[in-house]
Structures are given as structure tokens and as C-alpha cells.
Length: 68
Image (cartoon, rainbow, N blue to C red; front, side):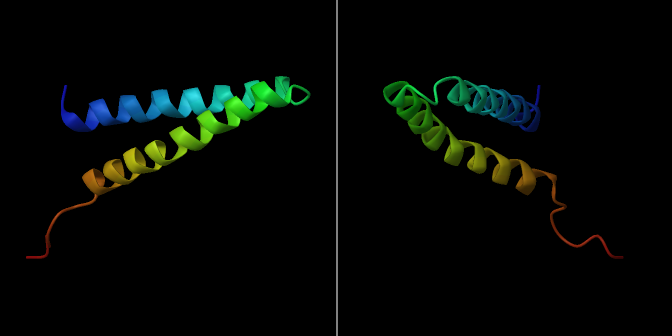
């Protein structure tokens, strides 16, 4: 498996975890302590997701000029 495929899998796993945390947050709207923990987790994982997305986009762009 190449590096791009590994990054894609990690990115998708992270997106799934973030989505589940967002759903979980709604279950704990009345419980301030747990809601705050969930929101902190989302804030911590969000930038990591952005970094992986940027790396994937950089890998999928053509490098150099292909005009002949």
C-alpha cells in the first residue's frame, strides 16, 4: 500500500471519528461536563484532519508542467 492510500485511510477514519463525536455531543447537551470533554476532543482532532486533507491535496496535484 502506498503512502497516499495510507493517508486516505487515516483521513477517512478521522473524519468518521469526528462525525461520531459530533453526534455524541448532541446526546450530552444537558450534561455540561461531558459535552465540554467532547467539544475539546473535536477541537483537538480538527486541526489534525485539516493537516491530513492538505497533505492529500498536495499529493493529488500534478507536479511540474506537462505542456510539451
